[in-house]
Image (tube, rainbow, N blue to C red):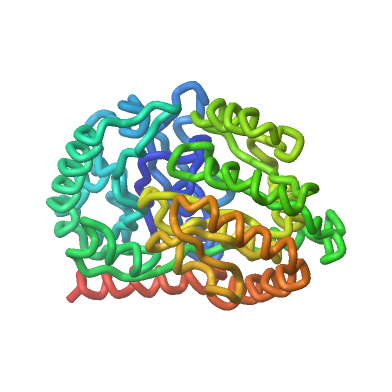
Length: 386
């Protein structure tokens, strides 16, 4: 089967959607299918080639301009780019590629709905006006709702997120979760000689983009209470983003600089080591800009339990009180209490981490998930033939 993926951004641009498309394409290639990824060549500063091969997957990058930081605008899409495909799989938002192909080509079109368009409450320390957020979200939702009926199938990664979405709750969808290639992680475990004795029973981890909606501020606000009882606790923060200066200022204001370390963007080796050696991973995201949370799979694949906030979608990835725990959104006190519980019960944390690994193997193996996607493709092709 020839599959064409249309995604607004792709590597070297990084993010959850890009990783999803890369891993799904890799899994489809391993299953014997031919995959082409078409994206916009952004950011321009990366100087990515217009065409390249990543393994057996072909990448085409189209000239475009980035508007408002996350709206690629390019020339009218050339439908000849997808004429040889059996299936066209679009990833939204943004909706430019969906608008270009939905209802305009003979092949089946399916789309993965990654998240709602929503503006954060704050950006780089400055509040975003409520009227602006409501206006942008109203028009974005109306536009999406006009396009979605034109595609043949919609995929969402959890039904909880779709049911809570102002858009997706109105449309039929196929629920197919995100997966993880844990075999690559296992190889790194072997290389680094990682085993349960390497767990640092005073280390907690945050890994993600340093943006307001990722909620890193809430685990920082929880640290003074945590340190009051467990003064040797170490918080590792990995990632970069527009909120870094504000987070560092907050840490300085609390006088806890010695207890928090920043590591920026990690190599794969560093990522595995930090996930594995941490006692617990904290996932304090705050809004519907988070629809699943792939990092929860990375934590569990590395035998580490998760503290996640109660957001529809991300709250369905772990098994509550078995592979991690759920806390209310934007609740630093609740975060502090759960972190202290893990610090007081390190053996229970290790047990939950082992349960998380079993969950990943049973439910989130990309080999299993790719078969679900392929079954949907086959179903759509059969309907077209009929």
